[in-house]
Length: 95
Picture 1 (cartoon, one colour):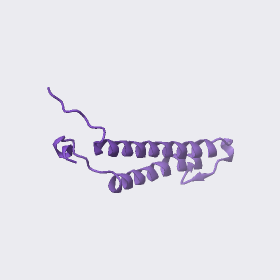
Picture 2: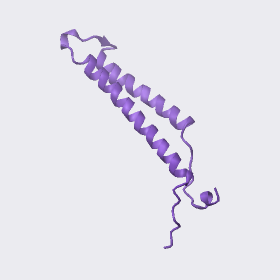
Picture 3: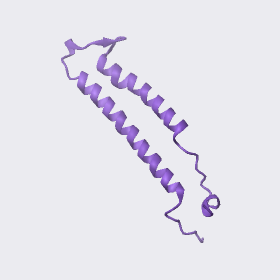
Picture 4: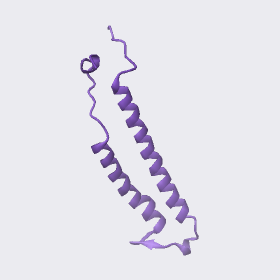
């Protein structure tokens, strides 16, 4: 079980770290979006709620629109910004 020494200059680590930070950014954006609409519009009295398609506005914007926007953002990020990385060590030894 002779494992080669992992080189800190391996480009896979840089790619993985960047993609992890993008993922954390998406999670934070989702939470801020949800929290802002859910507690911003939902903190009123129930009698003062506005409704969109039969849903309270806070629920429609935080949950329904929020999920739609996050699905689109995740698709765009994965399709155009994430990189397919090989897990084989041979492919990165000479680089």
